[in-house]
Image (cartoon, rainbow, N blue to C red):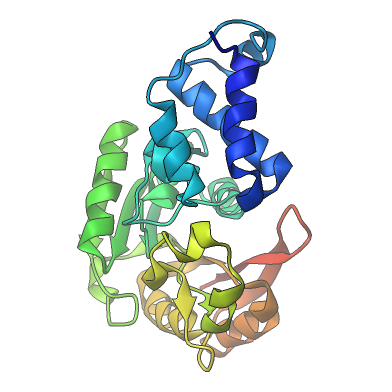
Amino acid sequence: MATTGDIVRRIADAITGIYGREEAVAIARMVVMDRTGMDFTRMALSYGEECTVDGMDAVVGELQRARPVQYVLGHTEFCGADLKVDERVLIPRPETAELVGHVAAAVPAGARIFDVCTGSGAIAVALAMAVPGARVKGSDISEDALCVARENAVRNGVEVEFVRSDALGDFRGEGSFDAMVSNPPYVPQRDLQSMRANVKEYEPHGALFVPDDDPLLFYRSIAGNAYDMLVPGGTLWFEIYEEYAEETCRLLRKRGFSDAEWVADANGKPRIVWCRR
């Protein structure tokens, strides 16, 4: 009978060529914790104990095809929420969790918040959980993504209204808000070839990439709508591509917003831009 340590090593050995050893071990641990119900401490203390992981061969096979572990497991943790994720939606990143933290700290209890390009609903659900009495709405052009988002709201016991709208169109009719937030597509198409297979072969390209010759098209459209949708003093928050921080701030100032500035993420890279109506 294999031990917990044996299983972690077996999974990690199978995918080290795809991810590198450190990340492969982290993924292996995620699988074991998910399939056994152990937390990290219990798993670490049981490395020498016998362990069984149901369906491990199938899991390893999917991971060896570079399918992201979050899709293999069918869910991921984000800001205290347990989110369903699959190929219909992006996997939420730690940088997006930082965005949620900044927004949650800045808005008052009971704030009306609109999340544009909501995808899995990660930001909307997390803010509904973090801001007392928040009234949260999320929108996306993808009905498939909205199905996942609605399931995630129910899954986490929060009320979020999800609607279909085009971030590149006129969506001012969605209401008036104290804060708006968006993690829109922002990766230049030129980056596609340098991305790892787990991203470029599985995650939805429509939620990731923008044309090389117009990388700020989503920011321009969302800002134009937001100026009319935010109450005076309301705030607009974006996750951004690090190379376009200053350009995004200039765009927002030209649209009439004040206090436009960028914030660095945990790695010291420009990752968030915010401004005030």
